[in-house]
Image (cartoon, rainbow, N blue to C red; front, side, top):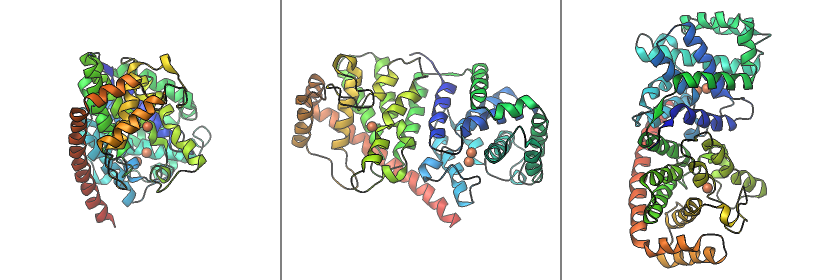
Amino acid sequence: MKQVSMINLLKSLSGVMDLVSNSVVSHHKKVAYIAYKIAKEMKINSNQLKNLVMASLIHDIGVFYLNIDLDKKSFDERENMHALVGYYLLNENNTLNKISNIIRDHHHDWEKIQSDDISVATNILHVADQIAFLTEEYDMYNDNNKICKIVSKESGKDYCPDALLAFNKLAAQEYFCLDIESPTAIERKLDKIMKIFAENITGASLLDISKIISYIVDFRSPFTTTHSIGIAKVAKELIKLMKYSLEDQLTMEIAGYLHDVGKLIVPPRILNKNGPLNKAEWKKMRTHTYYTYQVLEPINELPHLKEWAGFHHETLDGQGYPFHLKGEKLSPGARVMAVADIFTAVTEDRPYRKGMNKSQVIKVLNDLAENNQLDKDIVNLLLDNYHSINSIREGIQVKAQAHFLNFRNKIDRKVELYR
Ligand SMILES: [Fe+2]
Ligand SMILES: [Fe+2]
Ligand SMILES: [Fe+2]
């Protein structure tokens, strides 16, 4: 299978995370750029530098699980849990565990974490993060001295003196201050930086990372804790039966894990609402596939990925969303995902209802096929293999639910400590 640029994936993910917040503009990208510049000044080694930039791009990923507000300038003790949650999520993963350690302590005082390899990157991230927040309040170009003064007060206590020294040097340069005030400049500079770091990962690693991302998406709502893993396996089984290549099967599984990644921009009060959504809430909810498509667009190594994931609410009659694609415009892979999504949604147990039985499922799927929404042949293929596909779905979701409960217990125990 083709190799995929890891940094591209993290960059697009950080882009979605930044969409969540209205007032903090491109926080993750800004932090990544500031951290990179400070680290360069401090001449840290290239491996550490790469891990630092990757960590910076997704450092607040834990806020999604905790459903806390990214707009706040500083998080209190309890909310610092987001750093620990980020650590727990990423630490299980072979490719991302090297950055999980950097994320774990990114709000800790410098005094408390010094003198090992991880701490240099963590300390730089901590400083860069706080500076990024200050630039939401002050203008980096006009108020650079004020920003330096504010952070320097905490030198040797909250913040690493060497990192502050490096920052002070940068803040004295006009181009740097102007960069910080310009999201397009940051974007451009980051693209350049990423090229230096080009780290390609194998399809198998991408699969692992996608699974972690699916946890971040699914764990936000008690209704969907195992949804993405279910759809990933169902969709993969279907195209296996359709004799697609191993590479396509892997792409489909990844697409399943990531199909709802755009839901990160939907606020929890809508995701978890008990009862029907009103018009405005429904409009917000519908945007998720648009953002899924956007996040996956830069991953051009797997050309089908964005379609197979992003078109899962399109229907053959053109009444789906958000692209309103009709008939031929929907590839077989996109049709498979649409079938797998509905099948998984109706068969899985949710806290407020049991999953449907076989005859109910047959009716729902056949009706949708009759109404020219789902592909009839794919529905038939699924129904012909109902037993095997449904037991794969059920088995994997039971396992995933146990994993989720274990994760939740771990976090709940830690949250208790802060109460
Ligand atoms: Fe944070
Ligand atoms: Fe942050
Ligand atoms: Fe969806």
